[in-house]
Image (cartoon, rainbow, N blue to C red; front, side, top):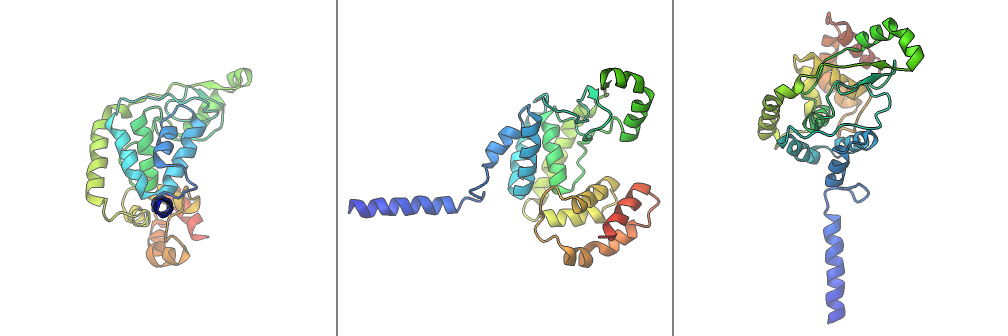
Length: 247
């Protein structure tokens, strides 16, 4: 009898593990969130990619990070990352226009990438064109030091309360029906050029795999809209839609 009970307990435990919504070879979402809010840039961006690949189940965890808008975690080991919290520019690098030292904005970065929404977290304090001009203008100092000192004006933090409210209201309305595929299509059919460009980037260089996204879906659902957007006067949108249509 004891042996029977032991066997039943073992099978019961195995059954519980198999029902885990997160694949067994993935770290749990809570572990990923812990890495995502750390100061180590390599951990942050790897955790962000994993959270995006998990998809919809990550969203409530990311929204929870918005509850404390004053949480600050200054990034370290950023190498040549260019973002509003950076103080040095090496003449090249990975450009991210989110003030990632603030945890709420870091969560917004992941949420906007995943949902194809534009909630307002981006901090457009300087453009790549302006950084190139800085590099040309200050090239002698760059040769001497191997870097430029930069001091971006950061203002997005002042708007966080409004932005966070916007996110939570959106999720309350969309939680039951949202999918990444629908979000992608919604962005392409929106009138928001930032959402359109971000969705096109996702299609050209996927940050994460979207279930149902394939050539058949593209041709059936959004090709005509992409052709329409390709006729725009906006040079960047025209360029990116052109690349997409050549696929």
